Length: 229
Image 1 (cartoon, rainbow, N blue to C red):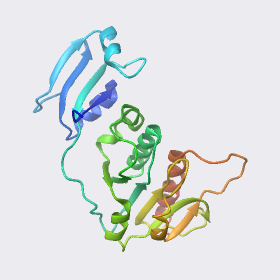
Image 2 (cartoon, helix red, strand yellow):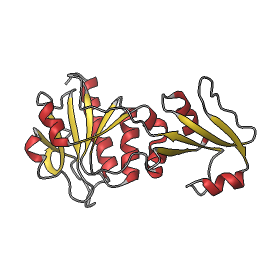
Image 3 (tube, rainbow, N blue to C red):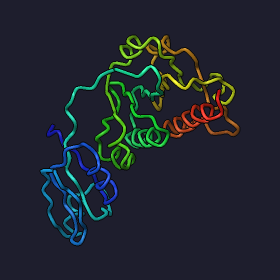
């Protein structure tokens, strides 16, 4: 509604200040200092008790920043040589934040979310992403349009039943499509999937957390890239 979001904790706030995000206010405990040069950022000293009152965390760590949600135009533009994560109706803010962090770790600079996915500026998502939210571009879009506009890019869909990710020959470029936690990939997107991949099970667990699955799959893409597949 207000176009703002909270960043909580000393390290995430420092990561925020390294980014191009606009920061309105920083509330901090005394003796904690932040470099806000060239920024129109108000810095307010507060007590730990007062900080706790405005925090969504039980134990806030030294500071809370109020930042502006970017309003610039986001596009479906992708590079011909690039790997992208695509999230279809992802509901859990913790999963979303973890996937953003995974993307950052593996050098994926852009994630596409379906328009019905969780809000990435949700406090739980921001917390789970740590500082990675400020380095990875998150774009909300119509996924059908995304795939139609980028037919040259291969779509790898994650399914419970598909070719093992460990024996599939994975490209260094393309879309990695992660489905909804409960329902998987939407029926309307399945026709765009060029290859169905899965993570083989060696135990009795019913399924994997969406973020855990994304991490395993992206890791295998990067592993094959390093060995020249």
